[in-house]
Amino acid sequence: MGVEAARDEFVRDLDEVERGRLAAYLREADKARFLLGVTLVRRVLAQRFSLPAARVVLDRTCPACRKPHGKVRAAGVELSVTHSGDLVGIAVADRPVGLDVEKVDLGVDVEAVARVALTDAEMRELSGYDGVAKARAFTTYWTRKEAVVKATGEGLRGDPRAAVPDGVQVRDLEVGVEHCAALAVVSGERPVVQVHDGARLLG
Ligand SMILES: [Zn+2]
Image 1 (cartoon, rainbow, N blue to C red):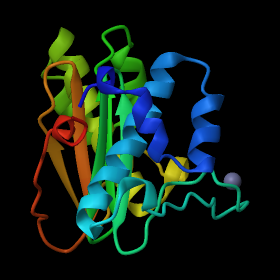
Image 2: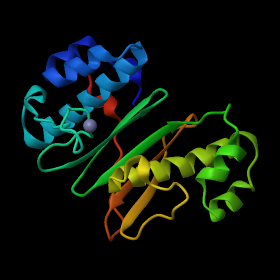
Image 3: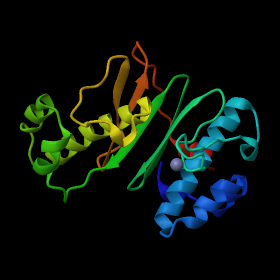
């Protein structure tokens, strides 16, 4: 969903850690993206657990240093939050999940980044595209990789040229012409994926 839907009233449902983080963002666009991500997580879990959004307990404890800047977690569900460009997305699942959205960057030197980021098979596929289609294809591969590292928890230590590990399922999601998105789930079976427009939760 789009960041323009961010509203000051959403701040009321935030906890102290979230308010601190919101205040620390310097750019309005970053504030809006963060606020929308938190609000979507709170409202989706509020529905699921029949609670007011402000009473949903979210945990961002960093496993390395115990400070509250880690990946968002909640008891009983697996979560992933992503934002890029004008889009914010969250994934809620019953097993480890990674969601990634990226705005297609037409200014990037695709060939140069592709060499360090893509597998040989992806490089061969990419060579069949030109211009905007090439930038989009690269972004599609990139979102798949990001989704996988978010699902498996490897973070930035993962090698982008590695193949998708066994037991991880990846799906591309359709999010319009300006962005690409992918979802990864740690699962032996193809996941059942339902996509909803978050706007209906924000009205
Ligand atoms: Zn830390």
